[in-house]
Image (cartoon, rainbow, N blue to C red):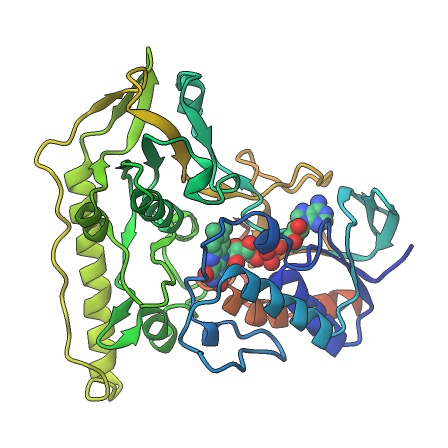
Length: 422
Ligand SMILES: Cc1cc2nc3c(=O)[nH]c(=O)nc-3n(C[C@H](O)[C@H](O)[C@H](O)COP(=O)(O)OP(=O)(O)OC[C@H]3O[C@@H](n4cnc5c(N)ncnc54)[C@H](O)[C@@H]3O)c2cc1C
């Protein structure tokens, strides 16, 4: 089977690329191992809602048209939105077609699936940035009596034993799961490392509105100082609750969640925690306030200050003076551990030498270090918003222009920094 371009993955990133290729009349196929929006259908917990408001899911040729643009979609709505998008743009998706190998050929690539082989000149890797839950090595030292699970295995508190739960990681996933489990009556201890505190609403507007309007989400990968760092920052402490409430460490302690430092190791069944909790929360408060200062300055400079509520500042994060430095996992207090310690992509099927020693793709703004190979949907790929649904459109427009030039044998002057990694 042949196509000029093979796109791997029918999440929003693959679909946005499909739409842009269609606009350019470039023939292509989208290969998807599950169904459209597979990650949202099969890999998320039941209560998850998008943390971006509905208006902020603008895809090429498509957007939100419902009655609640400021609300946050639940998973069934997110899946329905992407399924409808695939229909509207007539995306040539082949579902239940898992790619098991991609290798170079003389004229491009051979893309092997369990339903046959495709040959193409161009391959777009839109297979997702969050295919595998990252679990720290310390997991091996957890006593067998403690059940451990990742956010991809977690669905709701009902699946957990009664008793204490240790949630490791306090970014978006960790704080949301910690809150839900605590509310179910299982006492939660939350291990807190580096995190980014963020109010849901600021001066009467959604924080995503501010970051969008002030151009922060549009910041380009070749304009910022420390790209490696920007690509590794944790997700914002946000949730998309229908009542627009913020979710931060103070709201969790008010519910009874115990905060503890970053999980540093485990020995003889004892989990050890860093003593840096106070510093971590102070740093996070400081960074949040710096961002709010930036937003205030932007509002003042752009004539917006009078349209919104006056500036606000939030209560500093409260932590115990000396939180415990270890927990005995043999004592039965902790029955379950949830590893909310991040996600990573899976490129185990990619037989093209484009991975660095940490397993990340070598690319320059999505142009992979192998002619005719492109990437989509990873953190800060071309812009700060690249991994968000709202970021796929601009990236797909840029990269489809690059693909068109590549196919036509022309050079395209896309702004590109020197080779970077995802
Ligand atoms: C818990 C969580 C919450 C998030 N919340 C938001 C949010 O509120 N707003 C927002 O904008 N973003 C959110 N994101 C981020 C963003 O949507 C994800 O990073 C998303 O995975 C990126 O979209 P994508 O299309 O690149 O990947 P995906 O949606 O993961 O799509 C990739 C597709 O590729 C398929 N695939 C993978 N490997 C293969 C293979 N070998 N062969 C064939 N098909 C394959 C997968 O089945 C999948 O359908 C969230 C992410 C997570 C993990």
